[in-house]
Image (cartoon, rainbow, N blue to C red; front, side, top):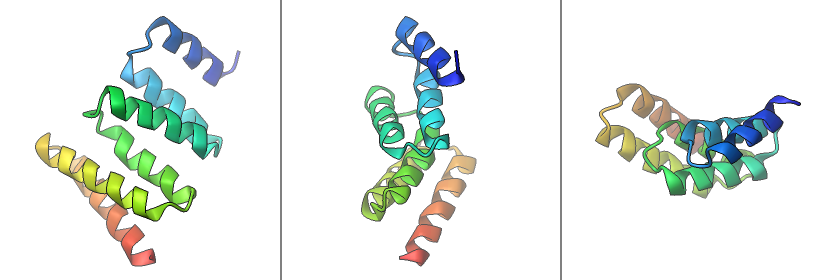
Length: 105
């Protein structure tokens, strides 16, 4: 059983585990299956919008799918959440990625 299959089994046992859902999305992202990654990240966002780590990676997936407008929206949402959580590290990463995307447009 590969890592993705193992994570799916774990998710079936605990479908509300944000970390497992994030890990599944990351496996899809790593495999460059951006549509599936987006699906899992968006579902995670719906279930646990305060899971700060998803915003950077979800936006990156949208960039890969050439939906820069959606990516910018996700970066902005993540920056706002990072500010609300006083997470300066996440905020800096999200702001840097957002600026880099804007410069490339």
